[in-house]
Image (cartoon, rainbow, N blue to C red; front, side, top):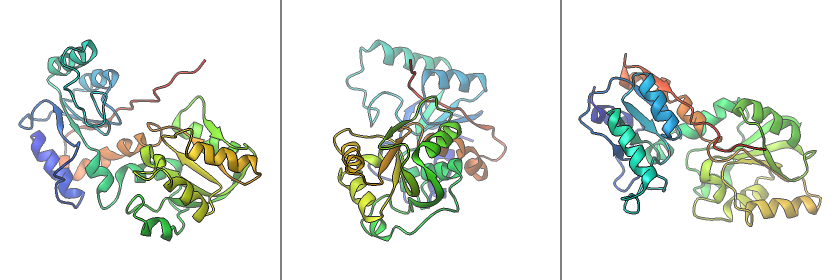
Length: 277
């Protein structure tokens, strides 16, 4: 199969028309390339590229940018040594990289979000979030959950193990009782164009905790800090952008099976970007 045939099959399976303005582009390589093997990943880092080559793959499907800006813009990189070395690595391995972001999030079912629910084991805990859905927040995603009673500390420890993390950031009291939780993956916790949205969701749906990706210290973080200082049952658990989206790419190979047939498709983890001391 050629790259263009796989991309066409993916977009058709998303049950949507191809987006006109999108970051979902071939970043390196060719639409006409014959695919020998595929790697799915959160981000095509140098380590992921090396691992894809070791696996015999020549096509990487990445969720996030390869070249360091949201739209993989390269006008500022012409003389940049890191960019040139990474580009040369992809050329040497005759690797094509295609970004699967906008179509994945805007599909009938958001594959990134569904992957995280599966990773957390929260499939049976969905609750109604009508006001949020009516506001157009995270279209087609019911992102509020009624969990078995726990605490922020216990839930954070559980998620650390599931997401293979050394450290989990929290805001608020670790002893906060958790029954109602929200999940805002990746940049969703920044509000998706409305920075008040996460706070409104927390208030309207009476959430005890939000598990989130990105966080701005003067918006949702500040809101929850003040809530905790006022004695309210509010907290954040912050795995970060990578850790709240990568599982969507982990489960992508099985979703691709109906498109790729016998072609080998492997997931390669980009991994948590931070170290701690």
